Length: 271
Ligand SMILES: [Zn+2]
Image (cartoon, rainbow, N blue to C red; front, side, top):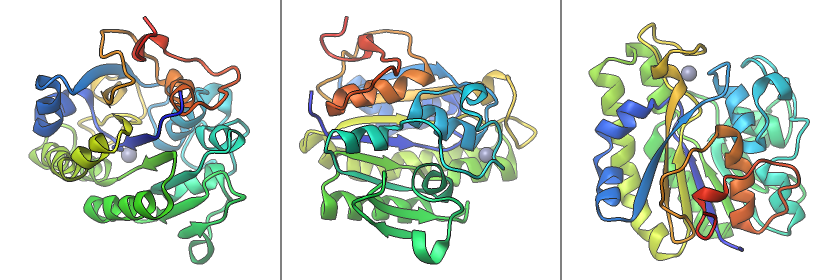
């Protein structure tokens, strides 16, 4: 395959809230245009360790990125580096920790916030540092990268759902409304992405608990959604591990995923 892929990581979104609050995405499912899977995130259920897990297929205890304070480049091939090896163009509108894992660490805002460097793993980037950086601004950043640089792989990583969960907790109107807001933003972009033939995955790193945090094994902090939209997915029931997202996206891109796990059943013709 040689598809263009958009991966949206809605930071801190629990499966149940995605399932109940995201009416546009669920409308796509009703119209047979999307499928929702439930994933159990790797542990600890924390952000930086799971960015690394999603983007390299390596769980935290093996990657060494075991907490949010480990500030260094990843030691593993990522979707970005494997796409680059295959001659693909990469881009990300994401929290600055993603830049630290795959481009340069530590993050220097004046140098790295806006990145355009063909030699880096993430060639085109808009990286933000404030957890309350508005999701709608971040999606505009991403759309700028998509339309100006035509990336084969684009990561979009907004933070407001997680930020709201830390302020108000899992079982709060504010947390659920942050998810609803992200769903509305997505509804402004996904029709164009579908029309232009992108394969789209929308997932989360981890969920949220009622103590306004995450990190452990409670269902609300470990169960996360994976919505898939696009003609190259099987749209059939299957079990998928968070560690298989990386290899599966490489397969879609037509990039050699080396020894990364792939979820064949998620892909058309993979059953
Ligand atoms: Zn968080």
